[in-house]
Image (cartoon, rainbow, N blue to C red; front, side):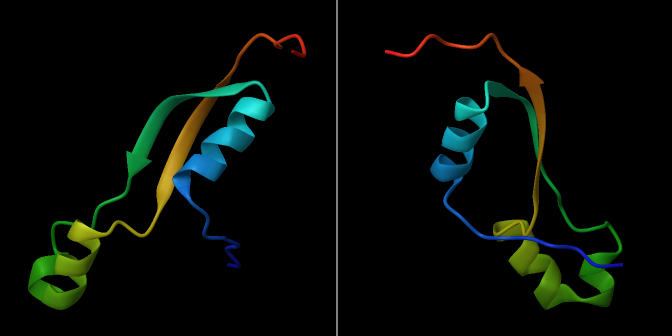
Length: 67
């Protein structure tokens, strides 16, 4: 499976959502599985402090008139 990603500041991503008339309904920072600290303690510690993936659930908002 190919997964494409890019890194950008959260503010830039939220600005893009807003420009597309989208609002964040739910935000999830995925955490490591419960079995991870036993199998890979260093990875578990890092991902608990710095989640590597954020998922957004977006909702459509009314279009704003230009200022």
